[in-house]
Amino acid sequence: MMNLYDNPLYREDLEAAGQLPLPWEKLAGKTLALTGATGLLGSFLVDTLMEKNRKDGLGCTVIALGRSRERAMTRFCAWEGDPLFRFATCDVNEPFAGEGIDRADFVLHLASNTHPLQYATDPIGTITANILGLRHMLDFALAHGCGRFAFASSNEVYGENRGDAEFFDEDYCGYINCNTLRAGYPESKRCGEALCQAYRQQKGMDIVIPRFTRSYGPTMLMSDSKAISQFIKKALAGEEIVLKSAGTQFYSYTYVADAVGGLLTILLKGTDGEAYNIADEKSDITLRELAGTLAGLRGRKVVFELPDSTEAAGYSKATKARLSGDKLKALGWRPEYDIRSGLERTLRILGHE
Image 1 (cartoon, helix red, strand yellow):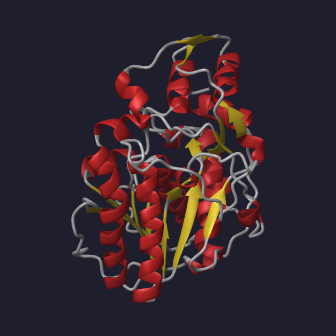
Image 2: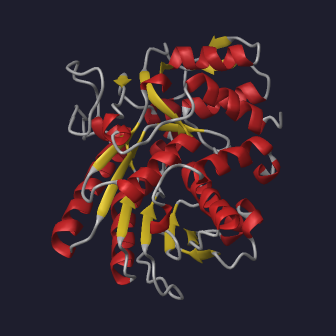
Image 3: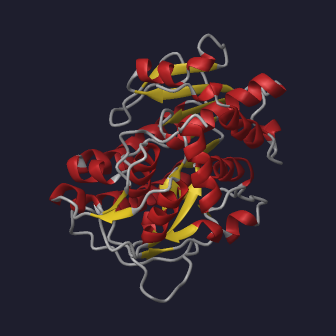
């Protein structure tokens, strides 16, 4: 496994994220616990906060929650032995008492099945992580003095575009056929958001909801079966990019550093109870153009191939899902990368360039 910490471009991303104009003092001396710590978004967030601790003396204790200590310590080898970094064993589908954790000022639930193969092969786990897992983390947060909770939601809550909007704002509600296998992910994210509102009302919790677009970057897991991740892996291998549809799907994407910058903006500046899209139209692109861009960056071509039945079962049914980022931009968030520059940076980091 490549050590990302040795890559100057990755370290540059971490330092840039740590210098965003945010009220960092809210995290000073506090404890932040998060699920999904080894995932694409969670791992970049952990690295950003730990780098901020190292460089600027933030003093924020980061508790990574997950099922595998070995996986976490391999991923976060740079922080092993640092007193501000801790790992706690946690399966979100089981109640979590948080033994040994005295306080968690901020709790983020980022753990989720997030790619098509998981949706198709583990539909039960997909739903339970977004509902039961969320409830377990909300209860953990309540028991540990949490001042603000964040639930990572998704662009998929908007469903299919009804043809009445070019961009989805936070109040848009499209169509989802709930009586399908593939509906497990978007419907459970919708239900999770509703559960957050229930805990705000009934338990008096402070909760914000970042809605992520299709995120990508050098922290991606090589097991990820999303189309963009498969394209990136093909490009890194110097192979032709395989497109398994006509490629007319028109989606919003976000480079991981910009996505985590949006998450931090929402966490530190967002309004209790509000949802925020993390999106910028300069990163909206059709799947065919996305494949072509990556092929062009590596001097290869795009080829068409039919998906197998398992792959097809996990694919999103939405054909157009462009999100408006105006609400988040009003808080001061500004993405650094458009889709081409973000893809190029991803390839350079993962390709050791």
